[in-house]
Length: 302
Image (cartoon, rainbow, N blue to C red):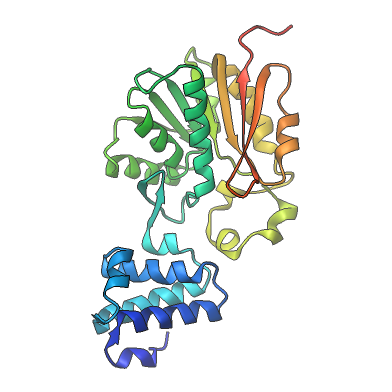
């Protein structure tokens, strides 16, 4: 990579930020302003307040060189989170690598749904709930719920061993190494032959169909693990397998909570039959259906 002419002389933070932003805009990088700021914060090991309150501060040449190398890397489409190795979720700082899906703000609605359903059932934070997060990835849902329910027994499953390594590291760095039990398995198969039952089954499963691939940003399509986001024939395959398994491992009256794609509301609801009651759909802040929840009928169905 050629060295930018800008790097041959000292630069103020403001000038570096402007140059980084311009470079990202020229490459049509989404959320360019945010990316330029986060990468500069990462290089400086400072927060946003520092960057914007010290615009005249001189950026050392070696820091400037690193910053513009990261800008060039982001310009290829590589997500900012994979460059910095971090993403905030539920107020917690998660390590992210290309082995896991990047936690997204809309997935917090799944956590909110579990909290709301627990309150509705009179299950407070001191109750010893049993929760399983299916397809845990970075561990963001499982660890967010563990932080909210300190007495809960939380399991997290994933088919990817490398993802579980990242999730386990997050449990340690967030001070919850014993709070979540991580298991390598396909969906809920490790629990189907046992007597262990759950209050909640929660999941953000892969749901992107092959005919939707062209709609994905290159950041997702080219950099995030396809195993985590989809590329499925139909898009609803995981729900078709997950719901019967959830029915088997949930206690009577227990809940399943899943994130869905923005076009999948009706398809997912149609997969929930008579064993499920109180089906509910929660929208995100843009009004897009984002989470479907349902309760296992506490009364046996004929």
